[in-house]
Image (cartoon, rainbow, N blue to C red; front, side, top):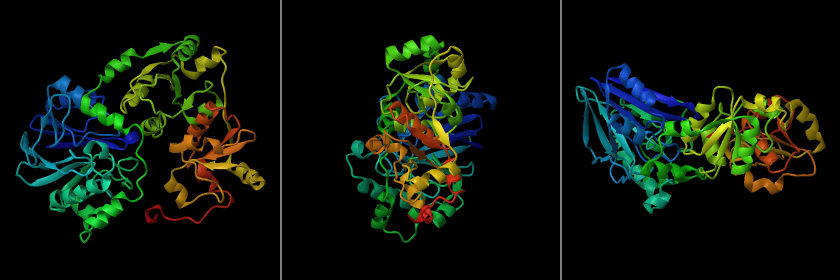
Amino acid sequence: MKIEQIYTGCLAQGAYFIESKGEIAIIDPLREVQPYIDKAENVNGKIKYIFETHFHADFVSGHVTLAEKTGATIIFGPSANPSFKAHIAKDNEVFQLGEITITALHTPGHTMESTTYLLKDKYGKDYAIFSGDTLFLGDVGRPDLAQKAADMTQEQLAGLLYDSLRTKIMTLADDVIVYPAHGAGSACGKNLSKETVGSIGDQKATNYALRANMTKEEFVKEVTDGLLPPPAYFPMNVKLNKEGYENVENIIKEAQSFQPNVFETVANDTDALILDVRHQDDFAKGHIPKSIFIGIDGQFAPWVGALILDYKQPILLVTPDGREEETITRLARVGYDNTIGYLKGGFDAWKKAGMEYDTVSTIDAHVLEEKIKENVPVFDVRKPGEYASEHIVDVPSTPLDFLNEHLSEFPKEKDFYVHCAGGYRSMIAASILKARGYHNVIDVKGGYAAIKQTEIKRTTYVCPSTL
């Protein structure tokens, strides 16, 4: 028996490759499926099952394409109703895979169809669970994402999740391994661990939601307390996962390479969004006017989903050399399929062609230390929890996720300064503000990490876990 976790950092997502006697199961695959097919060929195996723990909201799964390419059966849990061919498992239904078995445990609460898959070894011993978004390490799945579809309140769903955890998962032995669908950084929970593999025993001992003496009322209150609004792209991803989608390979083939003058013409004719995914320092030194920065080497896909509200928006790319296909693929992972093309030769080609470009003004934190004595406007674009934990005294919270709601607060007549934790998100904010006509924005390099090395007055630190 072989179990491999295939973890994708920018989505904080874990897919799983399970093999026994040449038969293979894939759990929650990403949209680009060739790596799973290659892995199967490398072990001379055949993909028999594709298990989906639920209709994912934060990424587009590869189940449809993988089934088309391999003939494998897609498995969903009870109450799922996809538009494509799939096997809807009964609660406790058993699937044979070589010498091992995988049992579908219906665990509603995160969503109604949420299902945990229990793997038993060749001796019939409970070995591991693939818990999807039902149980994370240190947390459980948020119960507010399926309200509309399920016609239930988040409190009712949380109550179901309480029952699922206590009747299906907490009854398992302490040594059973827990393989969750997500780790820290995912918006599917509130306080996920950075670890990506754990055990039932560890979770009983450390996970706030699995306290032995916890009442259902306490659970509902704690799980629903402090939930931030889900990213705007979540419903669209659920729809694609439920109804099907285009093969990502076709999307890559359809994207064209444009010389600078043609790129400019296409941008004007299509009203496409120009998305620049280079490093923030490169964007600051020079970029196409009105382009938006979201760096490929940060939390790329989640920020695309949070900030580009129209998933059908035509997109033109400016990428680091050789990373065009990767960028198109990562956009498609979260349902952004309308990439028209990319700038051939990247931004260097744009400059060599003598095309107009813009820059972002930046300062070091020690310069801000002097400027702030003059009561200059400073804006903190980190998440509310980061801000509540510690921030510059008298500086307001203007989270990047909700930047549009704060536009009226930014002055147009004088310089103002933005910072995040390290510089990635503040450059995203600066790019959006410049595209909206706020050319007096100045980015603080190094963000709050650099600010903490100065004498700028800050609030007393509060541990985020206590908030």
